[in-house]
Length: 308
Figure (cartoon, rainbow, N blue to C red):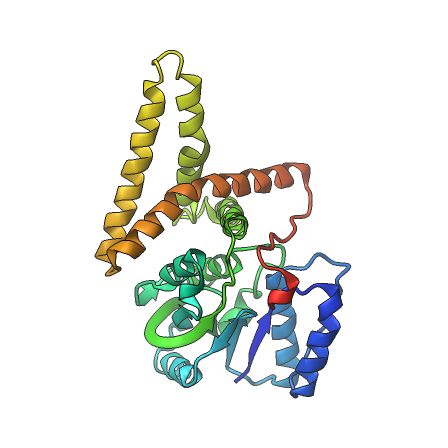
């Protein structure tokens, strides 16, 4: 059994972080920072090191750098993987530790509350079967976001199953207190949707194609059409656009209520989903510009280095 956590850290604090980790008896793998950093690349490096020191290991627990594992989770996950040989990834309940600190932390906590059972993807916290991870070649090191769902696409293509169980897994610390942080995080999500659909959108499951099309429609096409035709329609097109966004928000609100959330949470989440289309389309545009210009994508950070 082994678990590892990765996050990007500013150079000033990196050495102190490494010193503390080593003083606690932890293994530390230092990356060459002249090569653009991604969490996926770091996860691969940690996994490769793990196989060197524990070549016969069967399962590996990955943990995001802003999370901590709940006591008892590792045992839960191991039991599931042993009892179900076709399951290659198992994840549980991630909770926001400081939910009440900001509406943005509250939104993260709502986001983490996903249905249990067989799933299409996991997040950054999950226990994986080593043999399956080796079979697909690990994470895609070039991705700056969305590396876990992309990995899960390849794992499922090889016949593996992703399972989410009703067990407490990790506590997360989002530390999002400003609108600008929320915007950057949403932009990063849009970039991930764009890259995921570019890589696997032609596969039978059309990975993230629907989500990307929704982002383009609500985040760019609809407002452009409304503004462009405003003079022809005596601004009725603007009114139609506002009604359309209200309908989108109401649809998300009803769906969130059906998932068992309180009305206040459902309202907040629906507003976030509607407004989030705008930073998400910005992320989509940035991905495609970088792709066309063949530029290396870089991380979109919404936390300060002192947050880690």
